[in-house]
Length: 447
Length: 172
Image 1 (cartoon, rainbow over the protein chains, first blue to last red):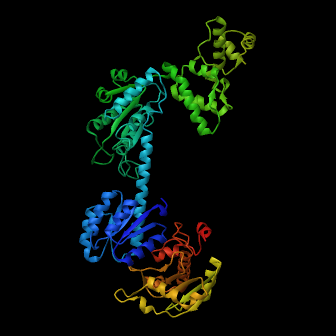
Image 2 (cartoon, rainbow over the protein chains, first blue to last red; image 1 turned 45 degrees about the vertical axis):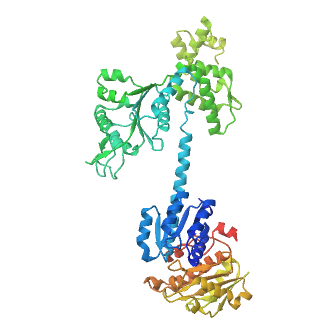
Image 3 (tube, rainbow over the protein chains, first blue to last red; image 1 turned 30 degrees about the vertical axis):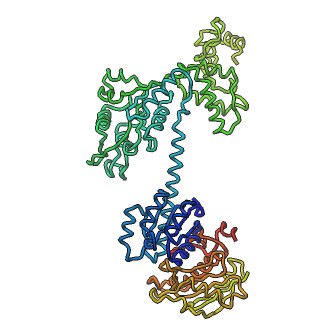
């Protein structure tokens, strides 16, 4: 906030006070108005908004305390500082109780006045940023990051909508790359906890000891290397959501600890004895067969039931092929913007390859494929050749016909790719001689 | 543009010639010094034991120097105040004609430290430039090295340079 945009109103019946304060603040570049009475101040506030008002506590007619109440009725966000003589400190304290930001005693030390105003300015700046950030968060609460119109994805939308506003624990299941974390974030962004953080914890990436310290935090000296007290993820997520990715990979010991926290919402930092209460919503994700893990006693049954309250299954991409064109278009737009590259389309045969591919890595693999194609491709459109080789020729592609020639062509191509086009090796795998393989490569125009 | 520094009840240990030369070179203006007399009793507040700087500004504007100088900077060793504040190092008319600078609280001795006239001279130069900047329409600058940065402690004055930052230079 530029000082010129910060409005100060000085209300004092003494002309000398009004003038000297006005002059002082004008030298700092603030916009300053003065009023010699409460009535004039109220009039000014009706037609113009101010950030800060200095109000003399003793004025003829309406006093500073009453004026403060009236000013706050007009503009709740107005910061009021009471100006008082030494004898009326008690009234100033009363003013503080009624919401004044501070009071200053005449005469004011220049450094005190300077600090006071810069503190108010900083506070207003933070408040403004906070409002802007909340607006940004509100804008992000739409579901527009989840792309698709298939029945399967519509079902996912419905489930997200029904569970987001509650505090219910959610278990998101699906293959790797199906967008489990994205769904968790959308649930959080549409919940009443959206102004608090969502803290992701990748349970598969950390060993037991590290994960325990990551989750619960530690005190200084709790273990070798613990030089400082550190908050854990549970504390960081207080008021918001904690997202456990790959929950199926948590060790037995940690499962016990987790179960206890989920039941009591209480935990102890490593090296401490003090119980800490947290208010967190839990969202978990896994690509493992948790039921099998329970049967094999690798995952605690009680924890399974605690987590498996509301489950969202994310379909693999191959089961919602109709969404692939939409996703492709979304990623083209996204990478075109990031790379500042004017590619906005994709050739139909390249799209055909993408729709027919099985996408074992799901959306993550698709996004990577498009990103790569955007790097190597030339405007205005992505071509088939721009796609990663293993996609455009892989065995994931269904043959265009059931003719023996087509099946043979694709099979030879697959083996050649597997052998990195080492002709001798590929010929060995195919159990034909090198000359025959060369002939077939030429005949099928594989190179 | 001619700038006149009018010294009244000022500290005699100053190197006036150097002060004027430095101020001239920094602002590229013609700065001269005159030893003057003002009826400062009119600005004296017996309860506070200080001099009202706003009243001193009025006295400066009424002085004879007004006839030849575009800006008048009063320099004094008196302790100055404006009614709402406990003290000021100086006061100026924003985009106006007059300013006044006090060396009273710029002496090291005021803070129980050993006398240092060289440091005092430097502080006075910065304060003269600061108040002169206000008369030229400059407001406080957020650059803490710029001479137009607001100073409420004497240490703030020592931290800043005796020059204008690039943004302030462009404004005059």
